[in-house]
Length: 117
Image (tube, rainbow, N blue to C red; front, side, top):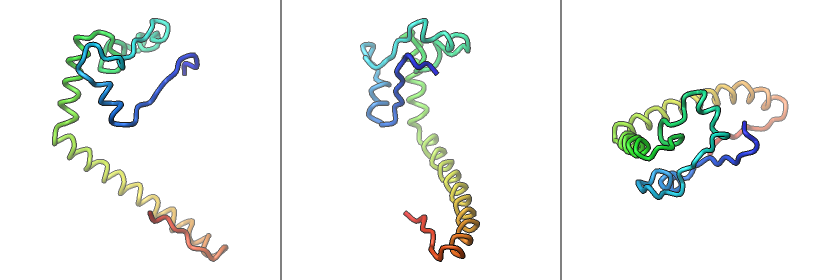
């Protein structure tokens, strides 16, 4: 961790859209100083992709490629399929935990555990 720099995690779609704007005057492209990016250089990550790329021409190409890939219907369908699969697996774990812990709770406290939404 670098405690001397401020990090912001984007989790709202409108902020991510601003980051991926096609403009060369995009104020949201972060410029790293050499001091802040030594670790990225050592790992070979600096100058690649869309978030750690300081060079505008490859950044535009990578952003375009990324946008086309992530906006394709095949990607969206596959993402939904995998999310459903992972949620069903997690739901199975919750059910097992409920049955395991629920029996103890029901016997000791005579209360029902409700995990419905």
